[in-house]
Length: 124
Image (cartoon, rainbow, N blue to C red; front, side, top):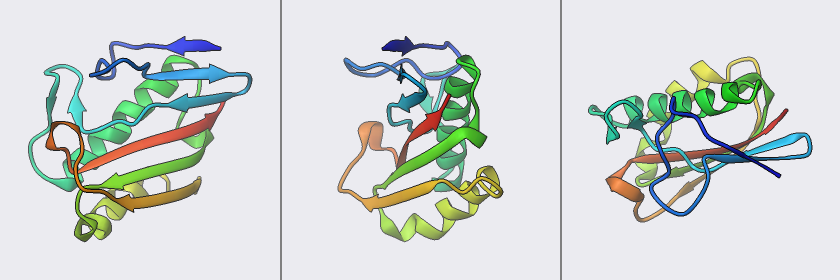
């Protein structure tokens, strides 16, 4: 197992790694819309947070020579399921050709009062 870390994505806010590589798969921890330069949640709303979370995912994957086109599974956690269509609109821009399997869940709260958290599994 290999631990992944890049300064181009937010530092973990707990005792976990940004991601790990196990054989040919990359497992990323959930990403919220934190700007890695400021370590603060991006301003705006669900669309901005979704975009930043996916950009964070992209940065981690690219650190190990992978990319969004290699994502096979996505888990999306929404603090409010009413944001589903707006999140989906942004999500589709990143995964228009490669459409990985996905689960979307509504949950009661996320770290730092984020609106969305996204985790992925990708092929190396």
